[in-house]
Structures are given as structure tokens and as C-alpha cells.
Amino acid sequence: MNPQTTAPLTIGAVAKRAGVAIDTIRYYERQGLLPEPMRRPSGYRSYGEGTVAQLRFIRRAKNLGFTLEEIRELLALSADRQRGVKAVKRRAQQRLAEIEARIEELQRVRAGLAQLIEACPGHGKPEQCPILRALDGEDRP
Image (cartoon, rainbow, N blue to C red; front, side, top):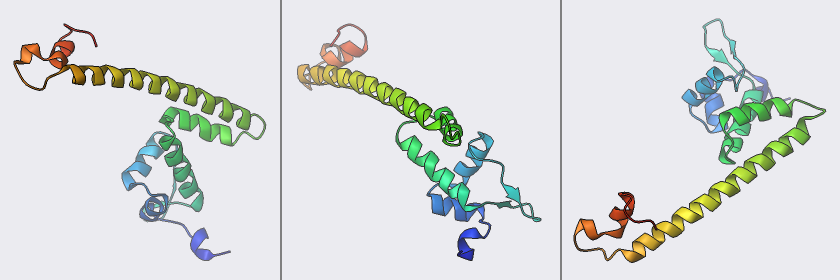
């Protein structure tokens, strides 16, 4: 075994390896996403490589659109050897459905905004601007 990977890590080293800020680590600890770290006699936090892996897991899950509460659930499910994978898949399917619904909503917003932009001449009086009228609730795209 390489002693560098088994030696206790400082919060700065963990942050650097995981690609997150030190404040993020402290925040995740307060939110219960990371366990309370061991403390050195000096009071400084002391971490293992498992924390780096867990932070990378959290970061990737956030990049996939999972909320911190959902990530907490995924972390718990990842430890469940019997039902974990099935539940993780179901949670991922739910997240995908939510993302698809959000994409549909954004496409509707995009189409409406494009329609307003097309209708706006880009000059004239503000009260004649279709974008401003729509924002005032006078016209609907």
C-alpha cells in the first residue's frame, strides 16, 4: 500500500483532491452528507481517502441535477446491498422525468420569448414594445 494514500488528509488536501472548496466540505458536514471527521490533538480535521470519493460522488450527483436531499438518499442507498441498486435506479428515473419536464417548460419559454423578440421592432415608444407589454401582462406570447 502507498502510505501517501492511507495517511490522514487535511481539509485542504481533501478539497484539492475532490475539486471542491474547503467551505463546501464544512457545509456538507453540517448538512449530514459527510460524517463528522476525526480530530487531531490540535483540533484540526483529519480525513481519509473515503471522504475524497464521497465528495466526488456528491459533485457528480449535483452535476446530474440531484438536490442535496436526493444525494443524501443516494448515499444511503449506495450502502444498501439488497435494495440499493433498484432504489437508485428508480430515483434516477424520477430525476430524468423531472429534467425532461423542465426541458419542455424551457422550450415553451424559449418559443414565447423568440416570438416576442420577433414582434419587437427594437425602436419606438416603450408602451408599444410587445416585450414590455407582455411583461406588464397586457399581451400573451
